[in-house]
Structure formats: structure tokens, C-alpha cells
Length: 272
Image 1: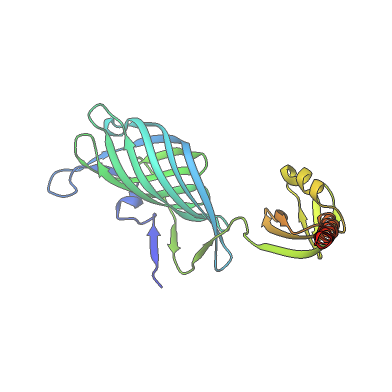
Image 2: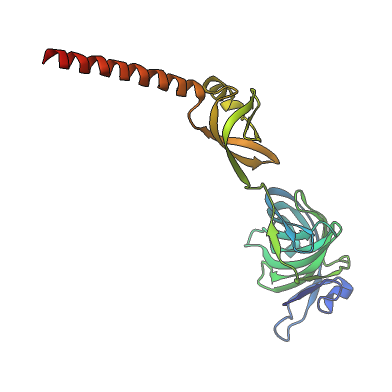
């Protein structure tokens, strides 16, 4: 079983002090402290839900969030965050990761971040490049809701400490509308504008099919119905089979044809 641990409170030595630094990451150049704040609101989000094998509900949300960042020159401008959040809503913990870009006249600052989500807040680390091509390593924290976005965001400047979560150990299966289906063939024992019962199986009739079903079938007819569980309601998807009215008509027509055939045959014999 592979486990991946995200530690925001001790994510490199920087996290303990809440710093963001530029320069000095890959060489002997000096480092300088920078800080900024940001708020970003959800422009477009999509979510899907699944349930783990131990009964936890997990919501995965992909979103784009836009707003404004302010602070040191490299951390000031219109900000866009792409985020994927994977949150165990049963325990209200999870992870949030993605990219961050602050637009500026000469290209802007870009970074990737990974953070721990804990009861409505995120804390983690962002790494990237500033508009002057300096390396950026910044502690990141904010209040976060997948549907609405980031508020009270900080890059350095006393970034709030984080938690730690362990991801892994249980698998997750999608949840959603059931695809259960059922069918029955036999006598229609009950029929109304809203439902039909055949051989003990009762299904709701969709509104747009009600008039057609009731015009072709009546209680006592024989029919075959197919139904599917939709939103927890067993709903009619198709109906077929010869009803008793058609069968009676068929019997009458068969008798008439037989009689006509006999007459025709008799005339032929008489002609001989």
C-alpha cells in the first residue's frame, strides 16, 4: 500500500517562519523576503463524488479562480489559480494543488503549489518564477471552499501554519444515479396517468409518455414493461406487447378472413 504524506506545518524549513523568498535557491546569490495577499473567486468549477471502501465521502473539484493579488511588486497583479481539490467531506480534510499566476506587464509570476486542506483552510508551499526570472519559494495559506474560491490568501508574510494528512490506503468508487433496471410481462393490474403495474412491478410513467401509454393500454391488457431506477424512483423506459383490445380485434379479423376464405373457396368449387 503506497502512502503519500503532505506536511504543511513542516514543509521545508520555510513553513515554520511563514516566508516567501526570491533568488538564492539554486546558487550563491542572496535571498530576499517578499510577501503578498490574494483573493480569488471561482469562475468555473466541476465536481464529482465518490465513496471510499471505508464509507468516507470524497469530493473531487476542478476549478479556475480569479481575483487580485497585492504586496511586493512581483506578487502584485491580477491572479489566476487553477486548483484540484480532493476533500474527504466526512472528516473535512484533504489536499489542494494546482498552479498560480500573477499577471504583470513583463510576463508575471508563475508557480505551482501543493497544500493541505483542513476544515476550510489550506496551507502549503508554492514554487515557481517571478517576472524578473528569479526563483520563488513561498508558503501559501488561505481560507478555501471549492465552489467559491480563496479568501484571506497569503504568500509568505506570516502565512498560517498547516496540518498534515495521509492520502492512500482505501480505494474510491464513484457514486451517482443507479443504473438498476427491471422488467415484467403479464397483465396490467393498475394504470393511471402517473404509474403502471404489471405482474406486481410498479413503475412511474414519465409525464411526456403518460397520454400515449393511457391511450394504448388499459387495466386487464397484457404488456411487457422495462423500467430503470432514476433518482431513486423506478421509472418506465419502454412498454410493448399486444394488449387485449388488439388481440380481440385480431381474433375478429382472423374469423372474418376465415369466413371470406371459405366463401371464396366455395365459389371456386361451384364454378367447376
